[in-house]
Image (tube, rainbow, N blue to C red; front, top):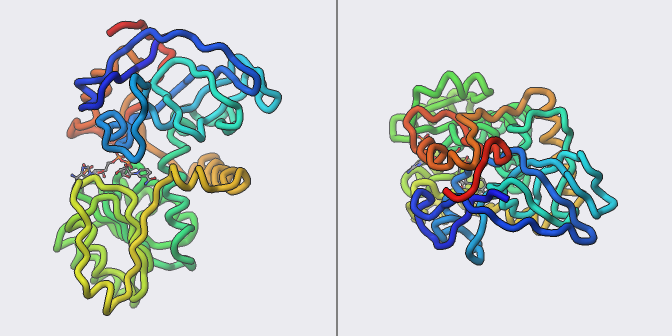
Amino acid sequence: MPALVIRQFGAAADVLGLDCEPMAQVGLGEVRVRILAAPINPADLNWIDGTYGTRPILPATPGTEAVGEVIESNATALTVGTRVIFLSYAHGWQTQRVVRAEELLAVPADLPVSDLAMLKVNPATAWRILHDFVALRPGAVVVQNAANSGVGRCVIQIAHALGLRTINMVRQQALADELRACGADLVCGDDETGKEEALSYLRALGARASLALNAVGGESALRQLDLLEEAATQVTYGAMGRRSLTIPNKFLIFRDIRFRGFWLTHWLARASPSERGETYASLLDLLRQGKLQQPVDSMHPLDSFRQALLRINASDRNGKILFVPTEGTGCGI
Ligand SMILES: NC(=O)c1ccc[n+]([C@@H]2O[C@H](COP(=O)([O-])OP(=O)(O)OC[C@H]3O[C@@H](n4cnc5c(N)ncnc54)[C@H](OP(=O)(O)O)[C@@H]3O)[C@@H](O)[C@H]2O)c1
């Protein structure tokens, strides 16, 4: 069975290889899932280089999330043919996986495979960070950096559907029209000029932001703080800039800003099955109504993994890169 595998930690281009793995038997309470699509997320690259919040025992197959189809079942809860996403770590960059039924969530088969493959992580992160930290009333303002990212685009669309306003700081201002079309209220540069634009927008509104969402760190995270109202919250959920957050004392003493972190892995582990079910049901509703779209840059069979990895830093990349594991895959590259 073809599977992408790492045998040591390092840059994905150096340590990822395509192997033939033995097929596991389906035990009681388990199902065999044929994996239809699995994206490459920043977390996967950190998992591969050993800097993520969890480190796998090697050798291991990466892939935080995936969508698949049950092709063999030894569990009453899931019948053959059911479309599923993995709520546990998916190890999705392979053609098949045997997994306990309770680690899966049944999803509608009539929604696009790419949307379902990207449902578990970024939409749920956006949904939870908009709900779990501040009680946001319609019209409240949320500011975020890396606003063109997968999570950022989900935040824009979910916030828009909830009647919230978003200030979206980006490095590439050429994307402004595209983000406004998703529902962004203001798109500005992630620099001092952009901050001044955001301050003018807030002055005109007569308000300040209640929630800041930080996926970058360093100076970018600090810029958000000047836009916040007293006692507002900044949630850090990513560290794309790889710079620590050094907080000037004034934000704690005079402004009472609250600093929190979010990790979906913890949320999934701590949430009850009904809380998880409600979150994904809300997101599936938005998907079905066309109110939650995640662009796809390209789709690759496993044996084209080198081309897929090259697309990650391509200057013209616009959207997620996905593996479609069962399409035309051989072993041993
Ligand atoms: N805590 C959680 O549970 C959770 C869940 C999901 C995602 N995340 C994190 O959220 C972040 C975004 O994930 P994603 O899947 O949405 O990413 P993505 O779609 O791949 O987008 C990456 C984003 O990061 C920006 N970026 C890349 N390098 C940067 C740098 N050096 N400085 C500033 N910005 C930089 C990119 O901006 P350009 O387009 O300008 O390059 C782009 O906006 C990642 O850190 C990811 O690990 C966390």
